[in-house]
Length: 317
Length: 317
Image 1 (tube, each protein chain N blue to C red):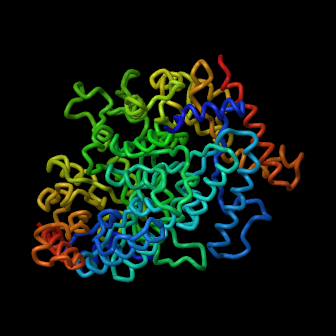
Image 2 (cartoon, each protein chain N blue to C red):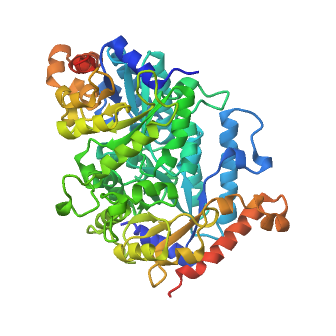
Image 3 (cartoon, helix red, strand yellow):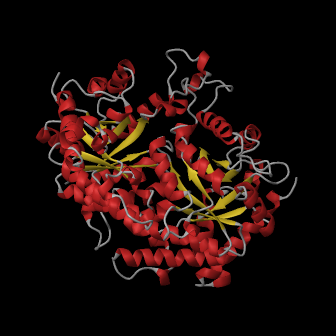
């Protein structure tokens, strides 16, 4: 029996002393100058992105328990880019990191089964490295339980997890997630918002028998951006067994303090993701002053600072 | 200036005389026996899936104006499977078909930009075949306008299109799409449902200046399953400029008659997708009786029957 994902993640957080997760969202135009490709061939672009990815994983591995690798930034380079995504998942595993595959897939059940095969299941082929499968993936649950069930079944069997979108970090998503059925002016304080409806569904999906680990957390998590403290605390209370993946720290404006309501009183129940503030540390004056053009040292220092900044959140209140 | 997607699609529908779209959703275990791989190597599986895909495209090309290729069924075979998806898009173009890439991507704006590069933009690399880019893609718009805008911009520039999920075919999606804010028993007939909210957003996104072609249809379409006639007709009326992609025909229970309210009175405005009823025709008695073990002939006959069945929908009422 595979160890439960939430238990594995909790152990990794204890070992590193921080709930910090670095997001790997590399863009070709923003790579450190020495790594940028010298021609317009796809293979050169993929090699550049992958070299940067490996460097970032090396730089952050000593400081954080997990990384989140965003498939979209690799699919910008077609199937060849997605191949690099899988290789980097395996590379991160080799560095002792847990890996969240940020794939945001969501389709009806018959299609979800196939997505789950390629993105979360144990490989059925002799020549596919099992290390290329992430420990958890992000999902869009907007097509209902059938769209996430195939992933949840694989998660349960293989000690993996899913994080279903409940409250995205982009304020642009509010036009969907703040929907309250009745027209906005008529909606009272008690009218459920769409994100609360999604939260209730995710809670229900994750509470099924056999999905909750010894930590009291389910293998069905939620992506929950920390907005105002009151609504975040209400989500934490409504989803007591749901692990949160919290985007929006750093470049998107979130702070350790704004993320605090995402945690349970004992300091468990959430991980905080930072992407650009770590990945692009070599563009920031505070790191360039210390490390000059050494992009690796800048990224490592930013990861260490981020890990230390959010470390207190994982301690009991 | 590239020809508008809706105009290109309308011309193709006129040329073939039918609004039928065949969905390519191949599953390894369901391939015709002679095509099944003989070992457990990933490369063998990809080759089998691709050979079947090419055969299906050959078989249906004389009968339908467009195909929908579902990325999920290829991602089940990792990046190598996605590479086959791109090669089949190019192959379909070579057969004179328009191609809808059924990718259902949906992420915040900063990530959506990257997904749009790899899935709808003109390639920025010398060695990527522009024919591997589909003419349109399906999207999940649940993260709001920022999540679809990068795709719409590419669609406008390159004469391509998008179809945003509004009403999925799976009844399991109802637990999300029938959400009405107020608890269900209290929701009156007039309370907007979540799918109607998404419909209103898609209408607004597609009505922006420069997005509507000479056919009066936008390059921003909607995936709209034909449920009861009244609610479908209401969606058609609420989205007068939005082309519909209608799933659920055939294996999922939809009929030509149930799809009729998706069309405008002049017979434009929608395409009907059938996947399994065509792809798996070689398992159906009605085709086996005529064609025996000739899977290619079965698929071709099923495509011809499907095309003829829905052909009247594209004629003025």
